[in-house]
Length: 456
Image (tube, rainbow, N blue to C red; front, side):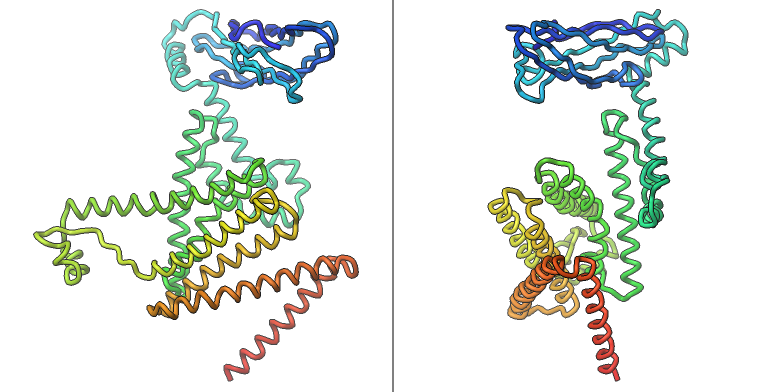
């Protein structure tokens, strides 16, 4: 199968036109063969320069060629030439395409070049419009603003559309009210990926994430100050959770839509790399350059002169100084948790053939273990920051005690899952959760009662 050529020239005018694209069957005409055709935009914009279409071509026994129509939309005076591609391919892998044409054996590609047979621009307005079209592609910007409008409406409507909003339940409305203050500003601020190949959207997204991170950081600091929580504890809990929510949703989307787990896992490691190398590296580099160039001032001398003046403050010099604080223990705990997490990922690949998904029970056990690892990191780091223990033996003992605690909690979770599975046969899942909640409430009340008794 192939087109006649790799390139086809057509002319646009002030009126809509159609032309035929022919697909040829070579080296035999026996049997029935079906190929699909689709279109892909280059500089031409579907809905503005051409009518996007897709379909199937059926070659019956003895048929050597088939045609389909392509619609070219009207062009304005002075509008620059555009191009798009027509692609033929076969999902069943029973058709061989001409390997010497564009696309190779897997598919063939026809590039359609749309010229403009209208008179050249002669007025100043037409010349300016033609120049802007050559630089910015006016049709692309028109489509971009149309998509931007739809993006804002989707953020305003519950469920993203009028139809979904009319059938939305109370839970959907509650979630919509919670997320609207966040969705609408980003829908207004972040341009759709139509503009300039997505670069405008990329830059806007980075700026939006930066502003959101600053806001979350300031709010978390105020929240921790109001409750008397140490800044370091606030940073590893509230701030870390707030800034990681975008990564969480991005990984969730990638896990659901992508065929492989690479995107969702690499998103996490890539985000951590950016945080460490850019989020810390760039500010520290700028600060180091600043103090190296400007030298010590009175504030630097008062803060660091007594301790570091003989080393870094000679002859009016200065350096950017960051004390390690409690970082070493926190990094060691994180490294232990990370090694366990990687072991779980490798084990899942060996046992179930993939890092994500698989049978329901092992999937739940893996999720529970990873959550417990996060609590393990938060708990030990908080303990170190609150007690300020410097004794290495005590620190190692704390880590060692945490391991059997995690194992006991995992066993309790396994027992809960087994009980839930067994209860479905007798009292049903709803009955089990009713008993579970009732038991939880009773235990909580007993604990509260003893807590008050202990205070008296």
